[in-house]
Amino acid sequence: MRLDRSRGRGVVRSHTGKEIPFLFPHVAVVGAEIGGKAPGIELLHEGDSIGFDVGWTSHGLVVTVIKPRAVDIPASES
Image (cartoon, rainbow, N blue to C red; front, side, top):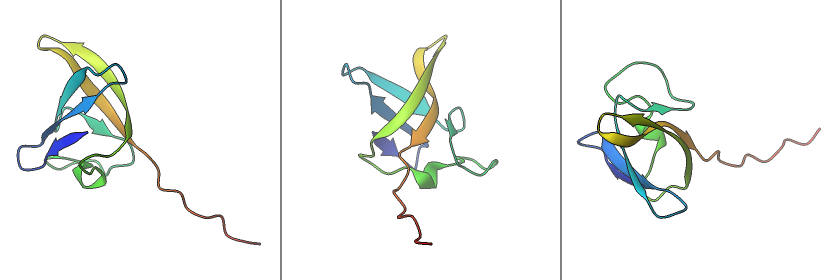
């Protein structure tokens, strides 16, 4: 994933190599607070491996939902 925080946009690459753009606030980030100019951008980092959903617009294929890969948290011992 490439991310331009100042412009609130980025590009993800599918497993087939196709680059698909996204633009805040027109993309939802799973686990992000609601509201603001770019909700969830703080959860994303350049080069992250993520899951994503796409949709069609008049401008073509775009990312509609980004699912950041969860950080592994060790289970607490009982």
